Length: 232
Length: 232
Image 1: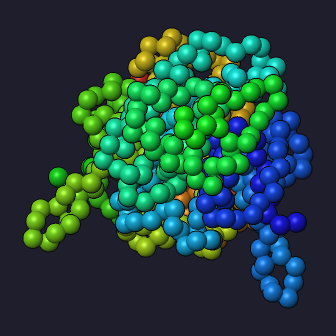
Image 2: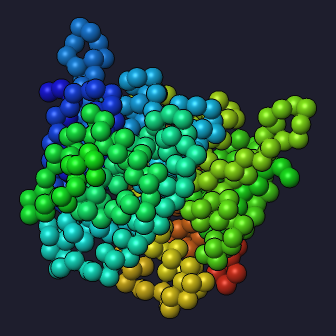
């Protein structure tokens, strides 16, 4: 069966795991899961009913067949991959450096998702599937304004740092770029006023781990013209 | 200056950190922060504007004074405390056992907070401070129904386990009990249909680390009659 990731193409939490798998050069079969349908077999894998879910085949006993291990929640999956493979290279440093990686990872998974990527995804994508009516333009406008504020914040941070949480490429860069890439699909990021953030994102976009994200397409929603452009 | 925690009494994320500090027997000065006022000095500590924020005095150089280190985001703070003191005892095990601790921690911090503790806190407490009108009884009712579903889920898990994520008391127990204790303040948990969950919570409630939570009071909102009762 090998390794499988149940995901949704524009889900930033799934994208985090996909980028990390790409960085670790781990093969994976991507399975699109329309989680809003609450498929019974999927709820058996993850009672929370959310993507991503990773099924990793593990050789527990060399004389036996590999055992499929089910992991859910993007943070639990990323920490698992980071610890099980490559010796934790994406969460390196002393206790304070690790705390900074975790603070910025949570910043995007919680604050940015609540104020920006969550509302935009709901209004532009999930309402189509859930039948919640047309997009709420006021809510989209507020999310876009919040996005500018968040981008200005990381632009300021990146004035003194090569990577988001410090000297090393970490889970913070992976998480932030996953959320921003979803926004970028819709052409919703104003990069020009934030040159440091733009330069940082363009470095991430060029990495092989980003390639599969740039090929994502969702029926009925075309990406912005610069979405795949490495020189945006 | 010693160690300071900026918190809000009924905030489940602050409570997580308080329980952990209690388990680690680390002295701390609690500072109530009305974070909704966006106090400038507080935003300087945490640009996200949220509690909890921990200021930990660290002796970097024995010939000099301790240096205050600022940590924000409850997960980053808990992982920091767990790694910096007591050798990670609250996140023990192999990669799969750790993934289970993280999955259940995220379950409460994300799913339970979104569906239950977040709406209840907003409707019953923060609307008073933010001036959002009276509580929305429909929203409270939906949160209470969701709470029963979550409690039934952990009741099922606890049929086979002594602690939430397995054999050891972990960050998952701390996180789940922090959120449930907030709900319990309002008398919003129906324990009786879930005997395993009730037995587990009563074990946690008896621990010395819970004592300071049970003494919390918020002006104008009295706790339920059984909130402090160890034999509820």
